[in-house]
Amino acid sequence: MIVEIALFVFGFVLLIWGSDIFVDAASRVAKGFGVSEFLIALVLASIATTLPEVTVSAIAAFHRNSGIALGNAVGSALANISLILGVSSIIRPLEVDTDAWKNALFMLGVTLYSALLMYDGTISRLDGLTLILIYLGFLYFLHAKHVRLGYGEVEGGNPRRDLLIMLGSGLAVVLGARVVVTTAVGLARALGIPEVVIGLTLVSVGTSMPELANSLTATLKNLPNISVGNIVGANILDILMVIGIAALIHPIRVAPGIFSFTLPLTLLVMALLTGVLRLRSRIGRMTGAVFLAVYSYFLYVQFGG
Image 1: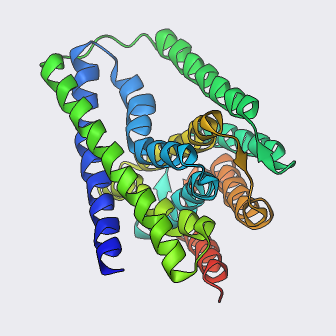
Image 2: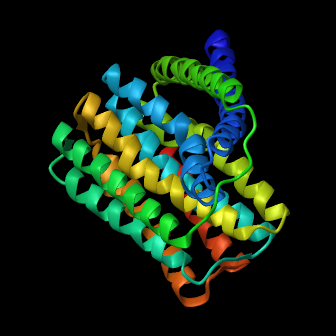
């Protein structure tokens, strides 16, 4: 048991460290190849911070641990809003751009679509493919918008060296994810806790650490658009790519608890976030307190309170 816990912690450290290095290296690669700061912020950063969720769920699906694969994706989306934005907005109210709600609405829409896919109890390979195609369409939209905005090239560095660093740190993330999944299953069995609970709580929160670090740092630096934008972008990736890739590897059987409890809570906080951003373009401390209350209730139920 002690060895598994130590390996579990080691896996998380490797995940977080690898993701941090990956973010920096990927940004330098983008700059070196002349990609705009707009795309770096809206696409590359969110992909990098969500890499742990993608890797953990893909490996879990490969080993047919669908409870961890789906639970990690939905649990991460819930934690990103209710825990991370909850803490961030209590530290400092988050004022964002007036059109931020549109991205939040898209996030809510794709999550509702994923709920429809889960209704029959299975997310098939075809279902997963549609999720991936939606995300590719989303990227195309962002690219088209970027081109119309007319951003110029940014200053480059040494892209070949940074590309090697990015690949190396990506491998570290993969290794960390493998350790997390393996030890999570072992801990679940040893403690008699269902695998889906491990995926929804420990794994999902642990793989959300890059988003937590980014959002808290952005909040402390009074950069609320980065804080909120990173979370919304990460959730879109969680729903479309994390679930989509996992289902494409192996069809996912939907645990009843996810569809009847975790997913409705996730949709609730997404709808609240979208509504608040639409009405006020601001996440205040009261909203943050509601988010944290929802996540506290979620943890209470998961651990049999």
